[in-house]
Image (cartoon, rainbow, N blue to C red; front, side, top):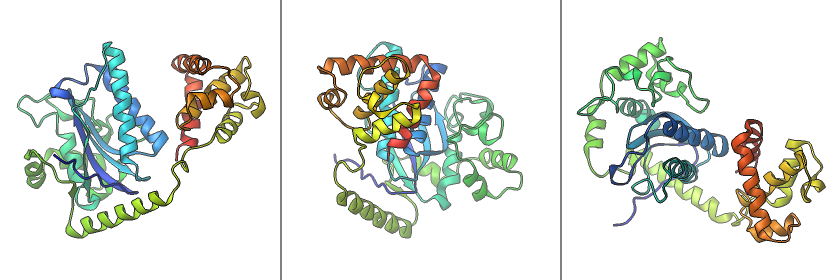
Length: 321
């Protein structure tokens, strides 16, 4: 069976969902939910992904997102891939976690953004055995933040949906909207086994295909490595962020210079796309095992030092298109 078409362009909105293989549980407790949310934070910081609503259930998730950079596949590869790694580490297992490629429905925001936020937020009670008596008590969705009951994550964008609904008292108004129940058109759509690639009017679909063709044309015109920063750019970025001379990063040193060197080497691998051999040559290391050792040292440091993690994330954000 052929894969469903994936339509991507800048400023597009999607309802994204996925579930565990064989409907297995993918969130076993707070630490698992937190790890998934960390991945969403990183996707926002690195790739500009905006989340307008989310709901994490025991064996699946729903996201309502916008892609200002037209990079949904890159964002979801990061979120799903990183969470799979973290899940396997926590469970001391390996292998794929999700049942396959995520589902993504491109949506016409003016018509469906608010409706889909309601559908997503009502998931914990729209089941045979509701997970909570009061929807606002469900911790792992953006609904409590929409009611201003909990602080909103930096990447959660609520204002557009508030504006679409037009309530003077936005928190109370949104609660009324959600408590009213899911629209019948939406309910019927999601009862089907196969979802459409696009949810919107005929005119919207025509515009979407035209935007996709334009985005694909722009991509074809670029050289393959245009978006990959070279080692000189990466070293310059790390020298600026950590206040050291560029020349010193190319050679082994102790202290802060050494950390800058480790970080530059790691960034040359991702997002730089360089091989271990190329990195070894660039940083004057005799064997690729030395690269692996120093990158491993960095990963240990990232787990222990919040300040270094912040610098690392900032560097990735600057270097990722």
